[in-house]
Image: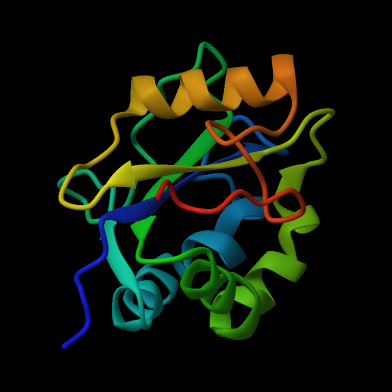
Length: 153
C-alpha cells in the first residue's frame, strides 16, 4: 500500500481583465465557460480543492487594490496533476485564448508552493508567495512550472 502524500501543491494565479467589469460583453467568452472549466478541474486526477465564493467561482473575490485582477487559488496532489489540467484538458483551450480577456502582466502571474496535505492556503498567503516570487525569484517557497522544486522530504 502506498504511503499517503505528505504534501500537496498550492497554485495561485492572477489575471488582469482588459475591461473594468466582469459583466462587460468582452468577458462573455470567459464567463460563459467558468462553470464548465471549474467542473473539469474538480474531475481532474489529483485535484484537491479550489477557492470559491457562494456563487461557485472566485470571480467575486478581489484581494488586490485593482478590481480588474481576478484570482484563482487551488490545491493539487502534484505538479504533474496541475500541469495536466492546465495544458491538456478543456482548460488549455481557454488558457490559449486568454489574451482576448486579459492583459499581459509584467511579472509572473502564477506561483506554486508546497503545503502539508490537509491544509488549505489563504488568499493572504497566496499573495505573499506571489510577491516573494517577484522579489526573490523562484525558490522552494515560491516557484513556477518553469523552475520547479520538489516537495519537502
